[in-house]
Amino acid sequence: MMVRAYEVKDGVICPDEWRTAPERILWLLKEVNDPGHEMTDLSADLLELARRSKVLDKDWRATYRPVAKVSHGLLQEWSEDPTAYVPALARIAVMNVRSIGGDRTASHERIEVAFGERKAHLRAQVAACAPTIIIGGNTLWLDGWWPEAFVRTAPARETAPFAARALDGVVWVHASHPANRRGDRRYFEKIRGGIAAART
Image 1: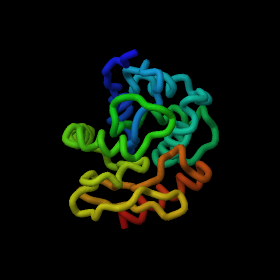
Image 2 (image 1 turned 90 degrees about the vertical axis):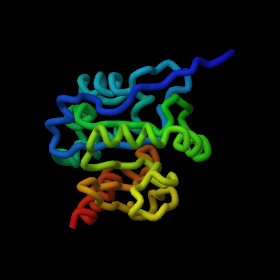
Image 3 (image 1 turned 135 degrees about the horizontal axis):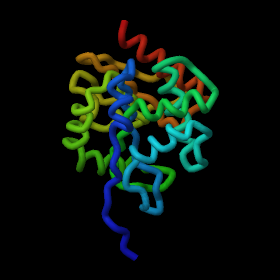
């Protein structure tokens, strides 16, 4: 059976919320978890989750619970209350290197090929959003993604500090993927610490 060719729309989740947020946080992830190839609009789906303001569905929890918690922590303060942190999804942007949904685990090789094909598009998409913080969920190791001032680095490891650099008013954080972490609070503290260090 042939799987239809499609792209999952992503980017700013809610433009009104994005414009008024104290920080414009962009998460750059690998690919959408959509093995059934049914999703068409990630932004709309995340906005619906944010509006429901409750515990995330099982298929979304591993990635988007830490994304929501960290985003809320950076925008306001840390919270373990889903009714506080889930709405933060409406105030951020999420982009995927690979625009076609995949399985729960994305191979480095598949992501690297997708990046090579979509590099110019991704750069234009990021520039159009004008984020103040870009958090790479183990994607900033891709050759040519980091601004030219940065040396290519290896995939991020949860056991090591997260590298962060400030360039032209944007902080780039080279973090492990949000689903690959040792505790949500620890993940948040490492990202927040990297941002603070990059801005000093």
